[in-house]
Length: 304
Image 1 (cartoon, rainbow, N blue to C red):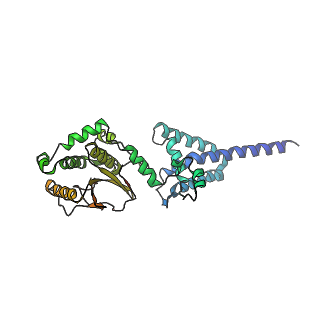
Image 2 (cartoon, helix red, strand yellow):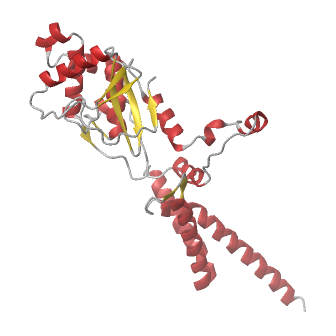
């Protein structure tokens, strides 16, 4: 008479274990699926991450529908795949946690000082995407590194030395720009994973990288030889700009560019004017200083 209740208890315990394994299966499976799901942004939310969790849930439900105990070998298989990726360093636990943190990223406005004190226990957790990019880019600027400084000085002397008497140290900036832009080769980051290389890394890897790597290199090298150079962040792009102190300096710079880059078909010099000061585009997409902007809308400017 006690066999049926005992079997019922065992059945309940067995189902509880399988349901727990099913839940544990979703946790590592969702970020793995997310690596191949196309990026889908809705405002500041990464909707593709929610899609990945939904697909993981449907996978587990399908296993339960076919044959519930299959969830155990499925869980083991997924753990083995995850372990292989971890050992190959192609997908780390940090990246998994980053994927999950992206799912809950949001922005809000602090309404009063009391709320601000409560919400800003760890303010870095709540930065929006632009803030995160600005902080990450600013942290990688390094114009005091000896490799960067020596690289900048060396290539500041490559060209235009005969024009030094006429244009002064401006020719050093233009020579350095010419070397970097003529030798830099575009290499994308891993899909979905943004990596900001230090200027030293870009120099040592043979002048390869994406737009942020080029910008960090250009800004750091220019600053290493005394130029003022800033980064401009736009939609899916970042580029450097060279500072011209006033109208006279801008006109002199424009004249130097036209004279020292005669092989380029110059249709004009692209720049920004802000309160009587001027900034010239140094993007790697241009063939000369002051080339056309890829995107003239700025989300953020990093000047210091």
